[in-house]
Length: 348
Ligand SMILES: NC(=O)c1ccc[n+]([C@@H]2O[C@H](COP(=O)([O-])OP(=O)(O)OC[C@H]3O[C@@H](n4cnc5c(N)ncnc54)[C@H](OP(=O)(O)O)[C@@H]3O)[C@@H](O)[C@H]2O)c1
Image (cartoon, rainbow, N blue to C red; front, side):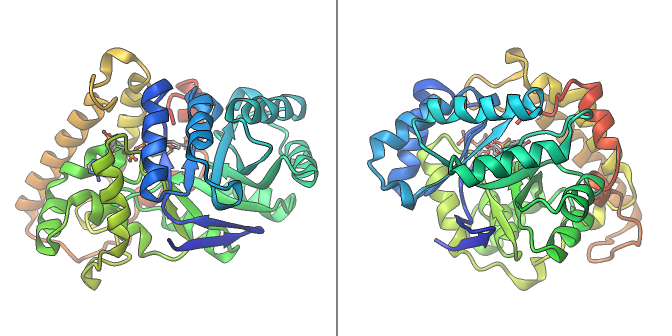
């Protein structure tokens, strides 16, 4: 397994996401993944599954040095005292003496970043965390953390997949040698049924999910943490690493040309504002895989609208307009408004 080296840690580029899995289901999924060869597990205090992840790790008997474990502090614990208590609570639940990567899960408007990083760096020096990371940090927040505070950030974990161009954040992170940990790399499972990906996958004799993951893995400084409960999906995601994608699909979001006129950005924001909080409500989840039907339905509507518009406008595939609204997802303040308006409703 290829690794990314950052801030003194070496992290397998493919990890297992565990959002929306708890208890025995989570423990079994993590045990399966470890058996298949996964050595990178992503959890968070908010997922309510650190105990299950810890039980799976203990059952695996894998040497601690050979395993990378990430966990995260929820936005309600972003004061120096609270985050230290949260770290100790996570370690207790995981049954570990340290985690490899400890992340701020979602920014909070009133967090005192210098004080938080002071605490995290002290805890790091004491050995309870090996490296510090952030999630969902905007460009403004990254500038503060990196240039003003000079915090040793090992990763920014952000939503990143073929439907979401993150060029501004990627460029900034790459200039500062900070890798991306791509969360929702399959757009919460939606990409497994994406028509365009299906057609690319069939040309490669593989699956749409594998194409989506390899598209990310082909980029420097990107790690991925797809969540997969099913053993077959876990294996398929491992196998994706060996896939060779036709170079024409490398490095540009291949669905972006159809999206750059702005409508997808709006749709995505609407999706997030109107739909993602619903993901947290049990009634909107599929009984079988915990995915959000409303997200799938809304994405399908967006897709159909775009396909119709593209047909009307002719095939613009391969063209890129100068306007890149999708890419601005983490480029400024709006995410704060979304996050706080929805009481951090974006989940995961
Ligand atoms: N830091 C943050 O704010 C944040 C936010 C969101 C997520 N995350 C992290 O990122 C991880 C991944 O994101 P996510 O769980 O939201 O979504 P995701 O990984 O994009 O998608 C997960 C879905 O894809 C399905 N899937 C996985 N592999 C597949 C394959 N090979 N073929 C077909 N379907 C496949 C899974 O099905 P099955 O499970 O049924 O196999 C599941 O329904 C989370 O679990 C979490 O650890 C972090």
